[in-house]
Image (cartoon, rainbow over all chains, first blue to last red; front, side, top):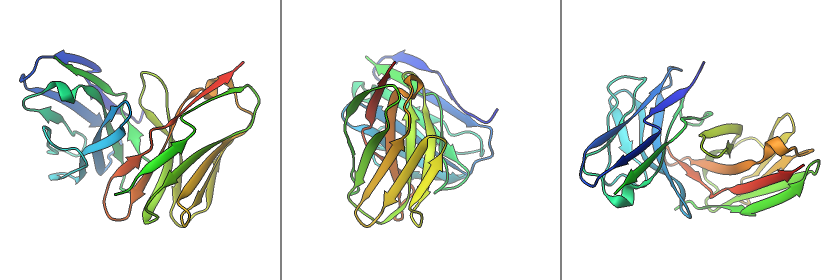
Length: 112
Length: 112
């Protein structure tokens, strides 16, 4: 089944403790991206990647890192999480920009 | 900076009604527009994608139109069903960058 898989689905952590949210797609898609969704602000793009080893900042990249060492994986790294990064995070992929986007199930992160 | 607005924020209708959801965007230089559905606790599912050169797309009971010059799109749902209850999001992809800019969504409830 074609899908985008995020892990974990739910995570509660403490301020400053490094964490990684994984994202994997099995559709051989070139384009992957991360979004966060917050009430009143909607979905905002954090980072995106056009291909392996190619990443770029989205609208709200501060406090996040990403890597794209393989086509299928695009992990989101929070080196020192803070409470304002409490949010619902989505990973998405598409075969190329401008084409249908497939989203993961989301990761609900709480930083206390 | 691109801004996407969706009206209404919430809509409740009886089963069987035809309905229209509205989306407007401020910068007409878009690559495409997508309509998504989001169910509680789940990710986003792409419903329809309209390229900037197209005027409309149809899938089953759904029809989306795009008027790029006026910065508007509508999603028409025919013969609504309780299973259509969800939040509907529109998003534009800009020609100037590789990001989707989302509206905040319309929360639709279809009552049996």
